[in-house]
Length: 238
Image (cartoon, rainbow, N blue to C red; front, side):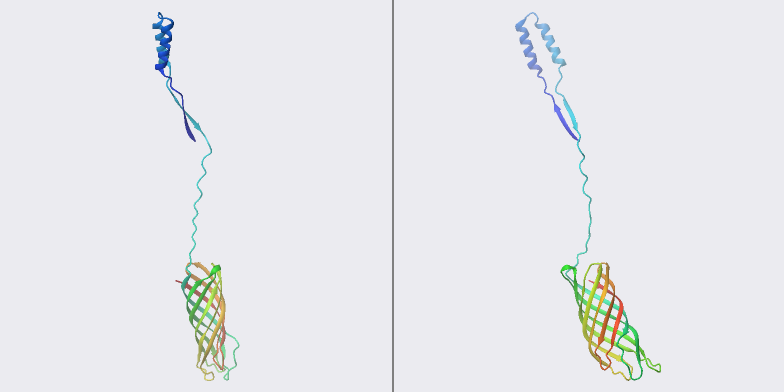
């Protein structure tokens, strides 16, 4: 609504009085007094300037736009990554031993530390170092237990894609050794190698949880241990 004011001009009483009196006196000197009184009456009833207020109605102003709040975690280009794996182990390509010893399933764990690098397109590359331990149960024909313990230190990298549901691929190479109480299997060491894949879930900032499967081996002759590992893992980014 817009308020507008309109003004009317004010009549000048002094000018009107002078004009009427002078005209009247020229025409008739005898009627000067009544003419003067009539002029004064006109001046008394004449109104002054009055202001009139006019209201103009228009459409209301549009409402202000709503406020939107959007938060997105900003990832640093480099970050320290700490990882831990807990897994079960299933031996593959099991050799035949002289005493009939038979390898069965087992389990193990890995710990990892690396530097995560954010790449273009949302990919993340993590060069890392780690240590892994796996234990395989074994018994011979007469019931003796001769389990295998495999240790390895490794270096490698993993690459991940995505933001919330993240597929991961990784591989490591390093040095490993096998220990066992089986008298027919000597302790040995050699090149260690593994590769695998994982699926991570990133719902908590700086924390990833997921499941993985990998193949691992240690070139410890004459019986080279090979196994598949299935497990869960967690990665903390600092």
